[in-house]
Image (cartoon, rainbow, N blue to C red):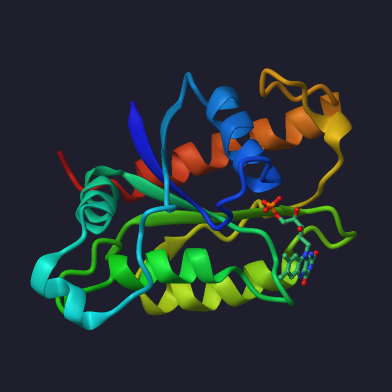
Length: 184
Ligand code: FNR
């Protein structure tokens, strides 16, 4: 089964993006193995830290390297994606010449309580991912306008149309990763 490293740009325990990551992991479990990486201990990027690399950075880069694909999830903050996610991306691309993301198939998902479901933040993220050589899936996109009634406490989707839509996304992303997998 293909493995997906998941980077979530919110550190909140009650994060709706973190919740959506767990919901997707559950929905995808027969097709994709999700590795949701905790970014709470990743320090703000500083070139000098390469002299004594923080454990959380080593782990972040190793887990991205081991993954067959990467899923980027973020809230929209002030019409962009969050600093937490940008910081993790910056670490992942360095040291120069050791970009952990290079050539990986990727996808973007976000949710927000607002009507446009993080669409503007995702658009900015998409341009960054192009620059770091993530091969981003174009469609289907998920701009989810969050509502607590969409899911239950056990990370199941309870609204049938939303479930079908997320399942379609899982199906496409699985095929996207398989299509871009290096030859065995
Ligand atoms: C927000 N929020 C927000 N929502 C949105 O749809 N567009 C936006 O531009 C912003 N801007 C913004 C800035 C800052 C600093 C904060 C803290 C929040 C609201 C945001 O979508 C909401 O708090 C989500 O619940 C955050 O996602 P998590 O942490 O629940 O995953």
